[in-house]
Length: 55
Image (tube, rainbow, N blue to C red; front, top):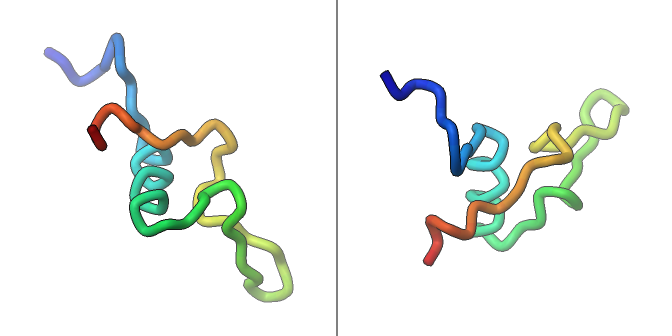
């Protein structure tokens, strides 16, 4: 009963990208080094800012 969205699907990585956007950060360009390895906060390249909830 409604636990699988059919339209307007928003994943957790979309939520993360939206929060970073609200903080003024670009999720696709934000990276950091950890133990000598380049890391990103949003690992899915398909992450998007959910502008529908920002209006």
